[in-house]
Image 1 (cartoon, helix red, strand yellow):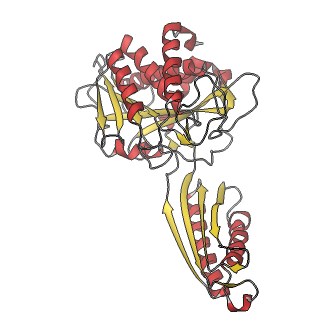
Image 2 (image 1 turned 180 degrees about the horizontal axis):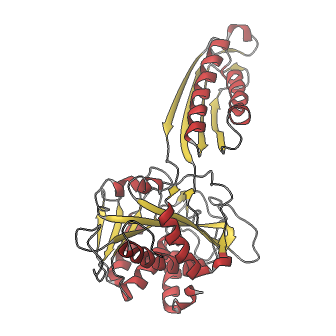
Image 3 (image 1 turned 180 degrees about the vertical axis):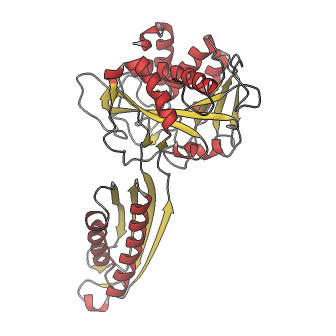
Length: 407
């Protein structure tokens, strides 16, 4: 396949970068050294860049000026412009891979593959720089995908003005190297968070009639909330409600007067989302009345769903076929219930988000965010080659016909 055309020198450079990122993980809005490494590599390649956002919590955006032969349909400098995106942040946690390049930073780990994403896009930058395309390409390295929606720093900066479309991707153990998932439509779920504060009345464990037990109320709520998905939402609409934390009580013989629960709601349909929000409020109100307690519900909106646009999915599909072949393209049976702040880009422009198989040969499946997560580094070739081909395919497609897909 096409990725075999990537030189061993470039592959070695990508591996070195990925391992450097892996050794020195930085959490959301702390990606200082990571950004410096990226800027140093862009300097080496010869691609100018700018730092967007406040110092220590911003994005690096490189711009490769193409040959500018395309019609001035989308960009002020006379060239069609597309963007390629990678995320920079790591996760809290201790690594358990025993890799020779394992994290050297206590309680921080690249357990979601963002180290690989950065290396891929830098590899694509090197390929495109050596043979510039007909239009411009932006290389977007954003902070805080895991927490904080760092994509909004980029979208709110104006740096993407004139960009026709954006492409991104994520490694996964669901597929092996040489396999990719490209699809149009809903790819990841909407993610919302909620917080429930229960205020009852503390008391002695021997005299429950004098108290209002916040833990008993919390238990009843936990059971009731599960029926929102199992009995109220249409079963063909994927939905998940999770209680992630519960904090209450101070001693074995004290009835707790307060309890605090936090959780998440994941949906792919606006109808199901609204139904769960309303149902959650209804249950909270009913439980407060039933137990003569005060219960407060706060719902905070999380990342919107990632919805790939049709034309850009077709562009990405054509690029992927050149990289992994038709046999390497995996079908999306259902959207992921995970969330991704790539969605913020797709609220402003067209684009496509793909998956790269990265499972090590002869290794069992390891989920993302696991302390043992690792990749087969051959996926770096696939990712870099895909991003390069995708940029070229997109520029060709838009220059051929600004409104329709080229035949």
